[in-house]
Image 1 (tube, rainbow, N blue to C red):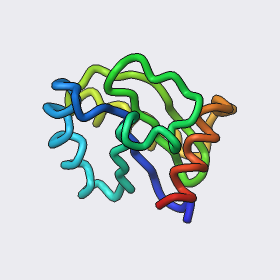
Image 2: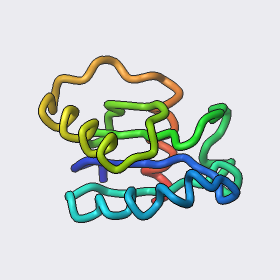
Image 3: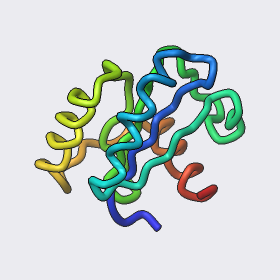
Length: 111
């Protein structure tokens, strides 16, 4: 199930920035990405012990390996450029953050 690229957005329903960002996030579905929107409160069992303090926080994975985990400016162009940069260096990932990798594995198992 790990094949392809995953784009996970960790947000909260109460967050206005997240609600405004969601359409831009979902528009990336046509880019061949597996999209997952994870509400940190509704899906707190999935999020686990990770402390998500700033929204939106995104996790981008190439297959089953985390390539990026962190906050971004909630603009479609910023996310698109980040994805393009990661895709341009496909297969050349540094060691992922253990917490982010565990989160990805929980998301992949639950979907």
